Length: 269
Image (tube, rainbow, N blue to C red; front, side):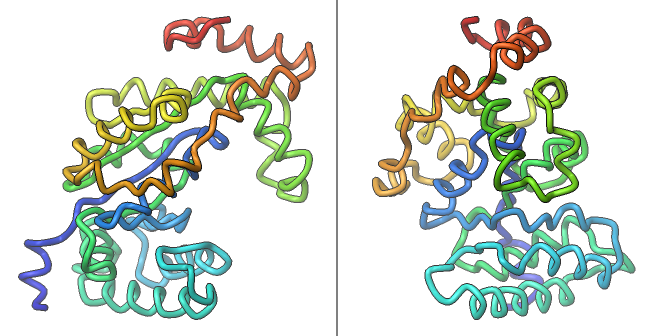
């Protein structure tokens, strides 16, 4: 395939973002199950925009190992190696200057997943780059949000167990910090409301058919091709878990900080 032809036929780029523990992984898995969508898991390509090729490689490779990518039903190590070679080879082909551009990444991903109409990456922290991402040609930004109380409960549970040794969690290790960060994410989402697609977590788990139809039409893919096997894994077990996951003091703190915004989003307090 020539570079000129590929440039004309390159796929749309899907960026999935939101506060941690808001359903970004669930949404990524659903999207990636569609035969015309390929979305990787937290490889942070677009954190490497504007960097030299070498610096971009360091960001990319630092995220890749141990992360699942499309097609990981094979040996993860072998698959990651092949995927990395394809992506970086294509990126080198399409690099159009001294630094890596968003356009070059888009072209590389389009060539790396040649059968996909939509390619992209899920990384919750993209929410903090949303003001810039929405300006990029061919980029579709998808944000999911969730009840602040459940976000706080789930986040704190992870911080105290699975993420306990991670230094970055110092910014989300109290109910107050999580609530303040959630507010920041919602403000960014609402500021870009007209340029993005928004899904409320609770609507996705209670009315998946409706939400996936809207999503498919927005992306320009057939919503009927989201497989039943992916949809059937969606449950409402995560709704309302804050009732047992937060102490009274933590619940009071989160509610006080997020009350006005929660009510404006339709949550009952």
